Image (cartoon, rainbow, N blue to C red; front, side):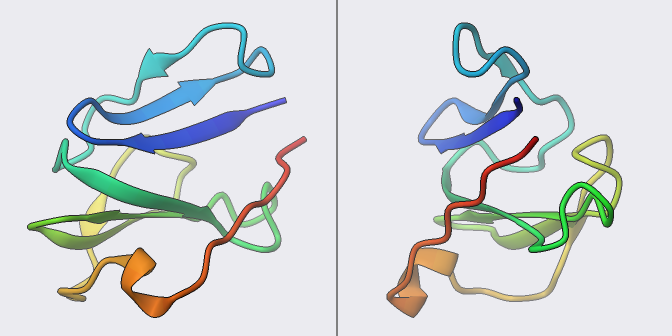
Length: 88
């Protein structure tokens, strides 16, 4: 399975072997990440969101290959909830 981890200050990491190893995800605009959320219908939508301490929220519509700023200036963790989703 696939596991995404938002880190500070290493950026977004991904594991495709159930956490045995991790690799950095290139192209994420910020390294100071606080949260990562996969869309509820993953992997059908392939939407991912990451939040940054300084740079707001970014969205990938293609499973992390490219990223765009959403225009939100808050971290997802500021909302008082955590989101965990098992990716198959």
